[in-house]
Length: 313
Image (tube, rainbow, N blue to C red):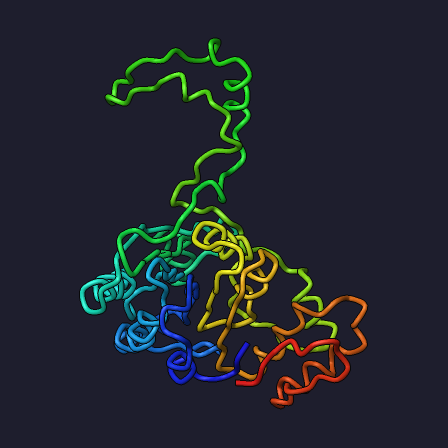
């Protein structure tokens, strides 16, 4: 993990070396956040700077996955189109292809925005993020068999006794349902609507931050989100990159799945606290020292660890 500006760090990567760039940039919100975010009028041009450089760094079969939260226009109950304008310009101006649009539904998200939902009650709560899966060519590396979902109880019954529950025939829609429909493929094909709650409040990262009296990153996505795309779009030992890493959920998940990873984060505090994800419980006596050294940039030789966890940027 490197602490620094991704605009300066991205050019240092080898061209065509990244198999998956997966990131959740600061959203184009109306109010400034502690982790930094650009106003809507500047947002699309700002983010395109990063994505132009990233295009050359992606492997020819590589993918770019962007998690973007929705937003409203200033002072009116009208949705901003920034995430759609960004998508069009990524394709038209730079040359990315939209492989597929995904939508992350967070069922545990609190009602917002307060003015239009809680007070006036004229809009439904915002609980879905757009997640754009883009690629350098129309045929990016992908394997749905790596992200199959558990069968429903109804499907399990059908697989046990297919003759009882359906007969091969043409449906009213025109679709042909053959006997192969009853084949057990190990799981169901996922949809492009990912329903993943983001309600974890006692995971190891937060517990360790709390134990040291440190403020955790306030805008983390759940591990299941990067896990889905890392499994879908990469193979073991492929390189995964997150250029707005925050607490480095992406890097932590990539490591657990046997992928190589690189992460960029501008804020030294968030870079240092992210190290707590990777430290074993039995090293709790060294957590504070690790945090202080990384925050201070002293990461060349963490002598109290077997191996340096981070390389200085």
